[in-house]
Amino acid sequence: MRAVLNNVSGWAQEVFLVDSCSKDETIDIALEFGVHIVQRTFRNFGDQWNFALRQLPISAPWTMKLDPDERLTDNLKKSINSIIKNNSTDGIILQRRLWFMGKILPVNQSIIRLWRTGNCRFTEVAVNEHPIVNGKIINAEGYLEHHDSPDLDHWIIKQNRYTTMEAINQYKGGALSVIPSFFGTKLERRMWIKRNFWNIPGRYVILYFYHLFILGAWKAGKVGVHWSHLRVEVYRMWEYKKYEIVLTGRLPIKIPSESGNKDPRVTFID
Image (cartoon, rainbow, N blue to C red; front, side, top):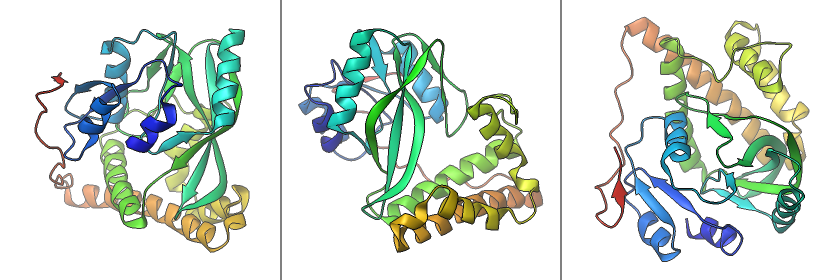
């Protein structure tokens, strides 16, 4: 938290934090930086982000979604400033560069992360939510560095939770981010693949080579090979969990929440 707040200090007009009653020093550090904080029970990712857009008193003309494990390069900040100054777009796409085991992976993701305040909503999904922004959208230069996890143990715990949420959502027939379409937009095509992936013969071999060669993870050497293997295992866990739910007829036993108590120094909104 301290690192990400240092990263945007003096650049962001205002910073907001929606905290799910964390047990660490998150609130202490955020208060130190003058962050506007509210606490709220976590339901799912789409719900939490839509709450933030609807309820937070955002006064800046532009809003940016930023996770605690992300950092803006100086070049990206300058590019964003230039785009906003030109006032010629409604949303901005960033290139997010992945880090794994402390090393840069040659794997970039194009993601919408900035929009004119009030011009965005998030897809109402349990995990892997997407922003829906209306109007013209252009690309910024520079990188948003994604330090996914401090170590592999943390990464595995996070993926375990994500795959459980995805398996439950799939079992319940939960909606995808958008209506899947192979010939649609990039997001619609991605949802088509997400829906039909499970019926593809040899899907895990294809997925491994996709990450290793198409995305270019091989350029990171052994780290890239390990990452490609683990990305396959994430999908395999998802499939096995869904199979277990169907086989047993019950949902996974919920892992006890890591949330702490409400902090009396900040507002709690249920």
